[in-house]
Amino acid sequence: MRRLLPLLLLASLALFSCRGRSGGSGTASTLPAPAAPEVLDTASFFTVSEIPDLVFERMQGKSFNSGTTVSREDLRYLTVLHKNWSGETLRGEMVCNKAIAEDLREIFLELFKEGYPIEKMRLVDDYGADDEASMTDNNSSCFNCRTISGTRMISKHSLGLAVDINPLYNPALKHGIVRPSVSKAYTDREKDFPYKIMRGDACHRAFTSRGFVWGGGWASSKDWQHFEKRID
Image (cartoon, rainbow, N blue to C red; front, side):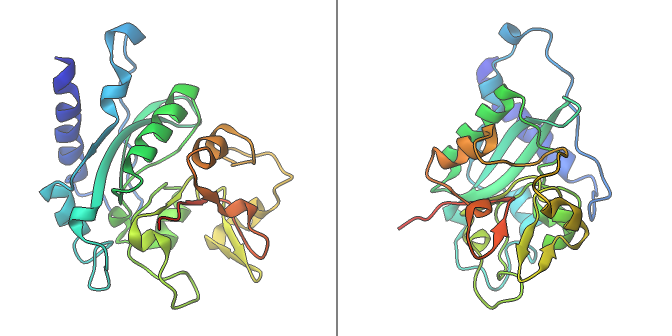
């Protein structure tokens, strides 16, 4: 039975994802809490697979578009569990580069076990691949073929090598421009607020211990939501 759990979760996620959610107006799916830890093999809910056909259909013309330089075969589909600020257990999904897929599976399993809060984890395609809309909804995501805002440079997200975590509360700040635009209040990192990523916290440790670089540590700009891995 335990070996069937990942397949059952994958099937349920595919059905859940095709129920017409749009533009950040929906809510994440809440799972009932297991009766006891020994009854449920938690790790079996954290899966990595090649991109299923139903998922790839959702990505077409959105995150996977005419400018995409990475192949479908080089991408992977993750399913995970995560907890929100209220402690509810939620289903999450993410597309990433195969080079970091196992890293991310381990990271999100570690964060789940530690109870680290992540509010939403949906494909950016549910927001029409609109990065601003996804960030404003505090959605954590990875792959999205796009340029870096305000430039013609290809983003690491286009290769599936960068992850944004709780972006509403951990915005990007460059040349006085805040993204998402509604997050100006959260550029004051001395304040205390939910979902804030700080140097040395569980999220920062989980990513940086596996070779990811944190945008919150950059000197010329800040991108507190952003973790990327540089692959040769």
